[in-house]
Length: 154
Length: 154
Image 1 (spheres, each protein chain N blue to C red):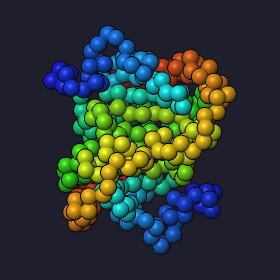
Image 2: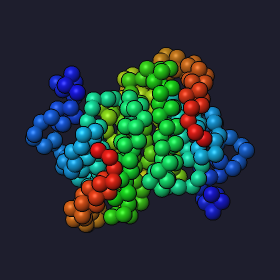
Image 3: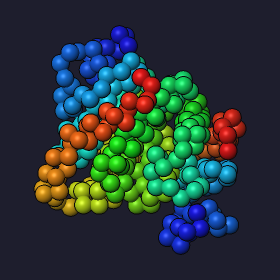
Image 4: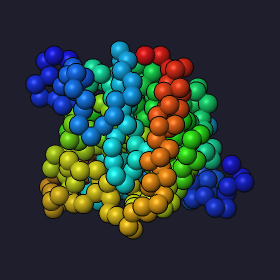
């Protein structure tokens, strides 16, 4: 990981004691960490970040791919149980930061972009009331995410 | 699957003998099929479509999640070997068609949207020459994808 330290923000964040900007760190484990993204339009937005500096999912060994996706699945399951979202979106893009990280995002039919991807054009204005209710649910959601991850290897 | 047949285009496509519009069918297996999407801007764009009608990745049993991601990984590996893309993008969104399907897309630093997601705003005009070269590589790419999938359970 150290070879990439100077260039890769996700390697820097893993090693610094200061929190990453724009995210809430939930869990640090040997192979991955889990953060919640502080996003105004999509509050129920988590990332599973692989600790080692690899660019592509297929850079992982089969056993690590399994662990990685079981962590992603645990986050998805917690989102579904706590929020009953219209849909969960999973994606690993990494075009800007080519260090393996998975986006796990609860989507609602009332959100600003639904049914378009969150990266597409806005479909409607933000629903302040529903967003406030969703933000109020975040402490319980974080706890549910952590609980779901207990059964996943680190 | 039959309960969803009338409403879900991905269930209809699995049962009809006619080809799905806009895609090239590469492989039919009991649990999934693999198609190449005919996309003008992103020719190296495949989908792994789960045959059973489930909405979310976490609807699959653990053994099926493993098979599903190994199929996705095989497609990614073939893309990397044949094309050396700048990045591979993996995503399962399903906001419009909530039937589990994975997008596997080779991205290049010259493509119309890079580094933005393909669903975001265009960054530049299409590079007709490079796109033509990429389209010429598709028969060999399809063959490599099929070969990579040989080692994945059906």
